[in-house]
Each structure stands twice: as C-alpha cells, then as structure tokens.
Length: 336
Image (cartoon, rainbow, N blue to C red; front, top):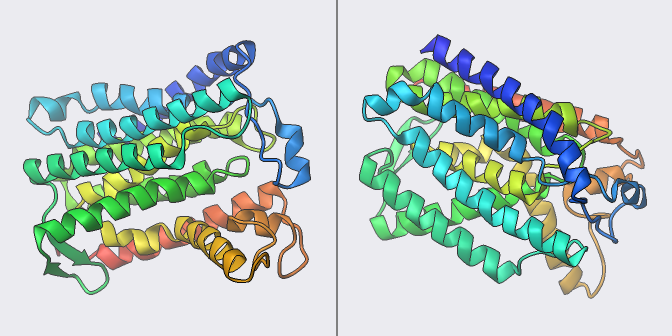
C-alpha cells in the first residue's frame, strides 16, 4: 500500500509537470487568456491574458494515476477512487463550460449562477446515491474528536450531503484568486486523506491513491501557477478540485471533518457571505476592503499591511497544514 501511494504521488507530479510544458504554450497560442475582475486589486490587471484552464494538468495526472496505479484495486472490485474521480470530472466539466463561456464573451462572466447551481446539485445527489449504493457512506454522521456517530434520516442526509458538496466546491473556487493559493492550500488536505489511508489500512488503498495522485498533480501544477503564474487553473481546475475534496470527505464517511480540515475554504466563503449581507443591510457599507478574505489582506485590511501573493500562499498553506494535523488527531481513534 505504501509503495502504491508514493508511486501515485510521483507519477502524478511527473505527468502534471510534463503536460504543463505543452499545455501552457498551446493555451497561449489559442488565446485562452484569463479575464480579470475589474473591481479587483488594480495590480491584478497585469495578469490579464494569462492562460486559464491550467487545471487540466492535474486533472490529466490524477486520471492517469487512477487508471494505472489504481488498476489492481479495480481488479479486486474496488471502484471508490473511480467514483470520486467521476464526481470531480463532472464538476471539472461544469468549470470547463464556465471557462469557455468567459473566453467566448471575453469577460469574467461565464455560466449563470442558476445554471451552475443546478448542474452542481444534480452531480452531488448522483454521487451520494452511488456512494450509498456501494457502501462507502452511511446515514450516520461521524463526529471527529469525540469519535461518536449520530444516525439521521436518509432524506435529511441527502439534503445535508448536497449542501456540503456544493458548498465545498464553491468554497474551493473562491480560494482560487491569487497565484498558487488554491493549489497550495489544498495539498495538505489531500495529504491528510492519504495519511488516513495509512492509518486505516488496505481497505482504503484505492481512495488513498486518488488523494496521493491529486497532491502530486497539484505540486506539478504549482511549477506553472506559483507567483508569477504562467497559467491559472481556471474554473476547470478549481471546481474539479472542490469536487475532489468533497468526494474524499464522503468516501471516507466523515464529511464533518471539513469543518477543521477545510477551515481556509470556510473563511473565504464566510467573508464573501458576510460582505454581501452587510453591504445590503447597510446600503453600501463594507466590513472587508474586498471579499473573499485573501483580497482583504492584499489590500491592507485591518492592520494596514498589504500582503504579497507569496505571503498569502505561505499563510494559507501553513494554516491548512496545521488544520490537517489537527484533523488527523481528531479522527485518530475512530477505528482504534
């Protein structure tokens, strides 16, 4: 098992970095450049035209890993990693459509919010039905740190699951606003799931291969996405990534672990919700200089210090790593 997880990480890193060598020039050639928010930090305007859809690098990497390193698991009848991959690919496809619309319109507006929500909701419900059918998830909620489970009605579980999956996907998407931010924040999340595989044993090997593959693929992608970025992951990559995070949480049957493990995603989302709500209630006043939270720090919110993109990546990835360690301690005694 250990060798398979390490092999998955290495192969994904190599594939992602190799795909990037050819993908980035191709995206430039077809003028698949990112449109930048006009209301964003003014220095972000220099990023206009940077190739988007770069998430195809790690998507290709983890797909290859699942079909090669994960092949022995399929021979044994374990398709958990394939179902997780399928969910992530569906969300990635929704993101691809969104990116395509943005490129076609040459502005930072893709699919309508309603269209994206309905597509995401359908994907989430289908995934949960499959995972229930395959026996990966139960309708009992596991509470990390207390190591107890509480059964809830199946209809309520489906509502809860749809909310968590769609919420997670869009939270990860919000985090993708600075060079390297979403990728570096997410690597500790997938390393956590790989570590859980070591802890819980061979029954979770296929899922661990998926987690290790994404971690390796993201590291390879960072070669092109770290500031100054040669490519952005786009909604293609960020929605795929969000789908993968949600899929892992439910495949390991512990979605509530995301409260700690995905803390940075939650902070980003809450800052956006609070900003919009406060703006409407006060008729134009703002709590943050700009939402989501990383833009607030970029603009010198609260302390007056304007965080650079590299400093933000260091902050978010460090907090994410600490949250991953705390989460691991929180689930350590589950099957002890």
